[in-house]
Length: 317
Image (cartoon, rainbow, N blue to C red; front, side, top):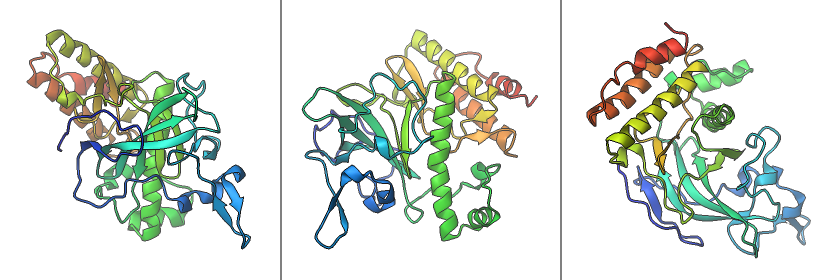
């Protein structure tokens, strides 16, 4: 995985990448296509045209109107909404650049602001790719234990039909949104989940107001005291998840952010129920080993007991 340094944001529609994992594929750096959610667009977005059809009334600036009121019940983050979040219906979303590309989704920096005011906030927009563009195909182990009600849909996902792959892509977004909501409510160190619209997940941006992204744990060079503090936070975060019977599923120093001394877990679409998933204990142990190994390699002692502790906290031993 390659890492690139973060850069200050462009105030309008610049498409600079901030953190690039895989840039050899052709992925359009645009908001979700209108056809993905146009059936849910509020009437205030539509204008009649001569042939009786509807067209979209775009905002006077930015890329689109805020999608806050497009999300249905259960598709917005936990209440109370944070004070920094802009929920005004007249707000406008402006794409400021790409933060990261990954195997199953791309993450963009978005500004949601009310025109002609000082009300605005930065959001991370994670957009899951359609099935033909996704590169993360080894997902069978993560999907064990996840089921939908209709047998036809279960068969489609198991056989990886076109319909089944689309359902799996939607499950990734829904799984991450649900995990973020659940973990945020219990105080786990994760970004606040703002809303989900189709396969686009909007969440709290972890970084500075000027658009400088928080570094990954792997990019940091903490001194001894800082290292010990980050380890304590990592233990607390993984123990909190284990007590809920959950494993991150792909935890590593590359999906842990450090912002002003605070550790934040990201990239949770593959979250695993360690009881329902037959491979759950293995995922839990792997998460613990990878994190413990990184801290041990930097001189922190007594990290090798984490796998056993998480197993006990999850009720597996």
